[in-house]
Image (cartoon, rainbow, N blue to C red; front, top):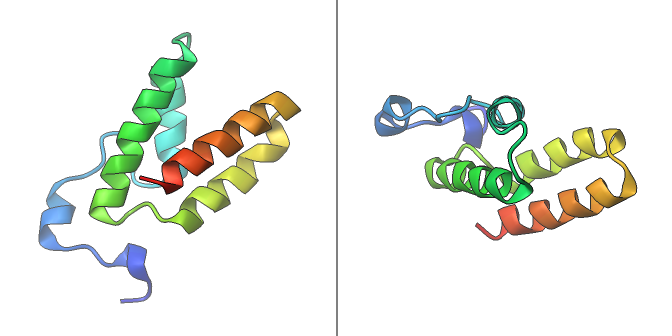
Amino acid sequence: MKDFNSFKSNKQKEEPQAFGSSPYEIFANLSKKYEGKSSDELMQAIIKQAEIGRKNGTLSDRDIDNFASTVAPLLNEKQRKTLNSVVSKLKKI
C-alpha cells in the first residue's frame, strides 16, 4: 500500500462514487449536474458526496485542502469565503 487512498477493500471497489473517483471529478460532475440550481441544492449534493467519500476512505482533509487551494485563485473574495465555509463543513463530516 503506497498511501491510504490506494488501499481499498473489495467492498469499496464494488461501490464506486456516483460522480467520479477524485475530488476534482466529483466537483466537475456536480457542477455540470447542478448548473442553474440553487446554492443550497449544490451544497446538499457536495455534502452527500463528501459523506460517501469519508465513509469509504477516499476523501481526506488533505484532499479537501488541495482542492480548495486549486480552486481558490479562480474565485472572487465572496466566493473564497463561501469556499472556506464549505471546507470547514466538509472537514467536520
